Length: 439
Image 1 (cartoon, rainbow, N blue to C red):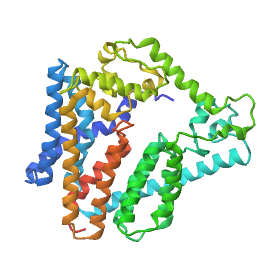
Image 2 (cartoon, rainbow, N blue to C red; image 1 turned 60 degrees about the vertical axis):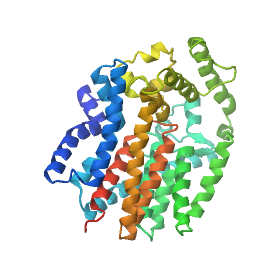
Image 3 (cartoon, rainbow, N blue to C red; image 1 turned 90 degrees about the vertical axis):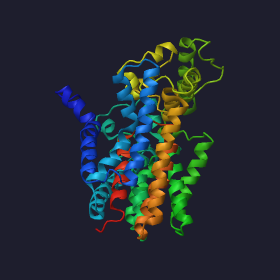
Image 4 (tube, rainbow, N blue to C red; image 1 turned 45 degrees about the horizontal axis):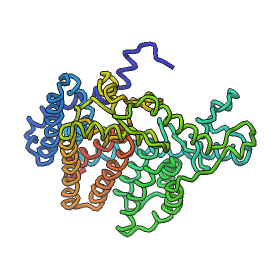
């Protein structure tokens, strides 16, 4: 439902960006006055940020992009990393870290409990009552579930819960982040809390989330913990099944003769996308093979085509692949006969960060961005070695391994998931400042 005031709606939607724009310059002023601007972490991070910003503006200038588009495009890349400086400035003690983490841990526990309830509701409805009532509102109002929407909620006979968040992947990645920090700073864990956090991770039934969970749990096993092995068994089993692209037809349990088998639904849906691409994309721009192609693969091919035409600096930040390019109606889509399709229309993004980055800022931009991530990882590792308390060493280890998770999920998603990136960068900033401070 739309809010009465559209301006208010936009302000709420972009509240995180607005807060970053407001607080970042204030943070720099405070750090300068406190003579903390020369702190090794601050200098290294600001240098890395400035390097990418410079590359982005040079790319925009070379491609004759307007200053506004280049500025907004660069900001979209850097906004979450600017959060590190903000939280480094305003949060200085471990008590402040503990208060913030305790609040977010409680939120994540609630998400996990809700995810468990949703899973129990859906699984019981389907397998016991043989009725698809996983969406409670549809059940109350006796609405028939759209067949494709219904199937998208299920994978391998398990209901994919989003808990109270926008998507199943967001819910799983957020709980995984909190899980990573929790087990990092606590050698003795509360297994009720672990179960709640794991609930959101498991019910996401996502390859990306599961791969991240394996990385995090594997690190803990190497460090000597054994209980994560129990949690890894169902995760690894499902991940192996998903890698074979095999699925269960949950609709068979509904005993509805008018429903099309799942395999036919998936095949028809992807074939329609392929036909749409064949009908609109010129052969010289992109050769479409006879076999069915996934839409994300198609967008990756277009991104590579753009990169080949603009190898070093790309086509300019904010010109292809992200919400900024949609906001400013980039001419690149028309020039490359890009078929947007319903997936793109819904997300306003190709949902493939590294392909987008390669197309927009080229090899030099990708190297600058990798340099930023490497700088953060290097300082985290340095702080881990210098930390005196075991919980701090665990915290820094967890933040390092979760950065790997971020790099991996950016292979198939957009990088800027606010609930994940904003939270992660906030914890990075706080941890750097309070690592040697007394609580």
